[in-house]
Length: 97
Ligand code: FES
Picture 1 (cartoon, protein in one colour):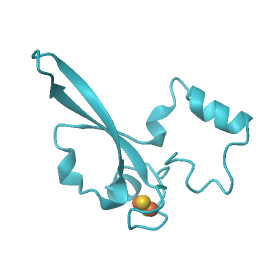
Picture 2: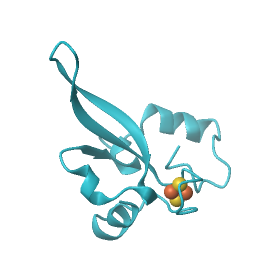
Picture 3: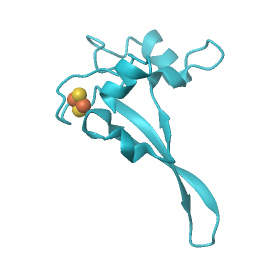
Picture 4: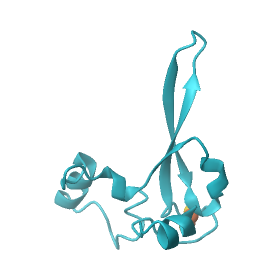
């Protein structure tokens, strides 16, 4: 999934660090429709290491990368807080955070 995002979809914000599932620099969010015991549908979100995930596993799911967090040109409130509070060090893993 990481190579797909960076090389085919034009979303280079997700970074490759270790490429082995250890560092989290490549973290993305995947949403999947689920049905609870009462028959109500809801979307369950979870984080994944995109370096370990095959694109084919995304079928029917929502993929959210760091580029998708911006809304109408504005950073997400968590992104703003990270900038204003100097919440990263070298910044390489920041998109995953
Ligand atoms: S690149 Fe390090 S966990 Fe994916």
